[in-house]
Image 1 (tube, helix red, strand yellow):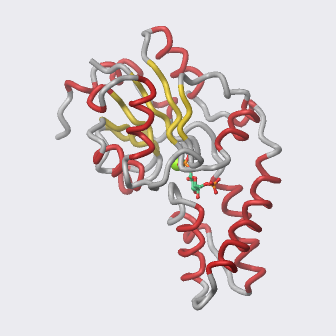
Image 2 (image 1 turned 120 degrees about the vertical axis):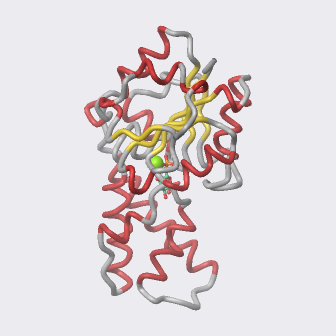
Amino acid sequence: MIKACIFDLDGVIVDTARFHYIAWKRLANMLGFEFTEHDNERLKGVSRMDSLEILLSVGNITNLTHEKKLEYADMKNKWYVEYISTLTPADILPGAIEILEFLKSHNIKTAIGSASKNAMSILQGLKLEHAFDTIVDGTRIAKAKPDPQVFLTGAYDLKVSPGQCVVFEDAEAGIEAAIRGGMKCIGIGSPVQLGKADIVVPSLDKLNFDIVLSLDSITKQ
Ligand code: B16
Ligand code: MG
């Protein structure tokens, strides 16, 4: 029996990828190279410092000191924080409120499992800071997805076993983390990237909520 649902934040509850993109692109342009939306796909679900490494490899920039890298990551984050300060409840993705209400009415616990260190301010902007039973974000974990730490911490907080959890994810690294953690997972996005998930839907509002409750008894084909 499924007892808890753990939601990734960026790309599942809200589309912050566009803000990450314009902030990373601003940094790339400052460093003298282009960074495309296609390049940005590689950053989804990836931690801030790992994202910087990918960006630097796109620009063929090597030999930066650790201090310089921290400075650039910090610079990007300041721009990003400025952009996400415009978020309001109108930015909550379609289907998110409805599934949270559905789960609550079926006594299923909910958690946020996000790599972002900015998760709390994003949730505050969306007025969702009290909508989840626990919040696990980048400030609480040491190992980034695809390590399952973020989701296992959520299950621990909610006092449920991993096999009783369903993870909602938009990134390949997050699906991998859910599988490694022994959890069921629903991919939000394209089956091409998220094919390892138990179910893939293009967006939360296209999901048949009843399926979530019995996902532990459904074996992936
Ligand atoms: P920050 P999620 C992830 O959030 C984003 O998908 C990823 O693009 C970002 O680099 C990462 O958070 C770290 O975010 O710089 O705000 O700490 O999808 O796990 O909710
Ligand atoms: Mg995500």
